[in-house]
Image 1 (cartoon, rainbow, N blue to C red):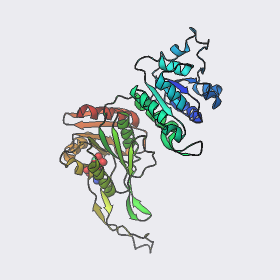
Image 2 (image 1 turned 180 degrees about the horizontal axis):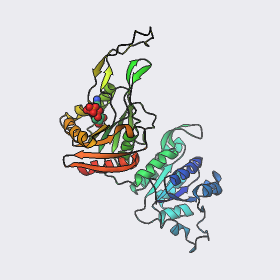
Image 3 (image 1 turned 135 degrees about the horizontal axis):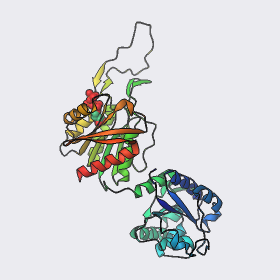
Image 4 (image 1 turned 30 degrees about the vertical axis):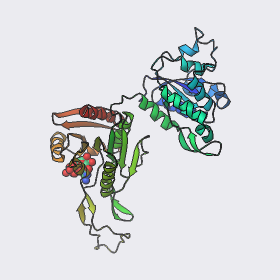
Length: 399
Ligand code: CTP
């Protein structure tokens, strides 16, 4: 419930992407937000007020003369207890109106009349030529200069059949942006490199050795770092998870590939923080077969030989000018003793301990942070919450 207690004024303007606003309304509600929908007349051509009222559970307003508000001033009253205004979709015309301070309908007047400092986010949705038109680009520059936050647009297939920039972000991407807007920017501009998930070490082309890591904790940390304003690279072993919106995911399979991808990321850009969350296989099969191994009788078992994999965390921690390194330890017992010892052995300032087999694949976890001062518990919570707390702990240590 990342938006618990938040009130969002959701403005709809005319555009085929209004159908995505319906899904966003549900997602905002599921995330704990109260949604107050305001629509322009043009928006009502694309989706009805009945639909938006049913989905938001609140009366939908379209008219600045609406007498249902007790003082007859919907353009004032609708935003006074709101936390943000979000315009989804935001048409070319409405961008023009915002850039010039027009107030000729309820939504534009409400935007102008919003309390000072209230975030206004807009999700442009239009044809590629309309987006690229110099007039639109002038207006977009004005919005940016006025502190109005742009959510997208993205490039891709458009409702009109053309392809290019101007496609509105998807509802889950918009939700990620809105959630991020409310998070303190504790890692603003910092480059954060995260490893996550298991590795997969082939035995032959169809078999391999892996582990039960789902990647959920590492992905949650990547997302929390991004929400805190960081530029995030996520080097991930095989998982079923979508890359958190706004992160740069590099997918790998083996420990060696993960090591190489981490080193490439470090060579491409100085990283401020390295968080090794991945459950990396300590060994690979040295005599992996290029062809599928066949059963050839009860006595003739395959003889696997193992070779040591590179220790990625140790390699990064040994670099001159290393990033702030955070290790993870998945133990099965004696966490306090093993965690403290592993932090020293791995030569990292912060090590995060958890009981591996009781967290792999689960949605919640409990963590113990080990640093030079001793240890600190982060009590059981869902992984998103813990990730946010861990990011705050890291930000406090690198400040
Ligand atoms: N790690 C890594 N590369 C490896 C192995 C581990 O980067 N080849 C990182 C993990 O991502 C984690 C930390 O090192 O952040 C601890 O991993 P763990 O496997 O618990 O440590 P080991 O030193 O292998 O100790 P153990 O004897 O408990 O396996």
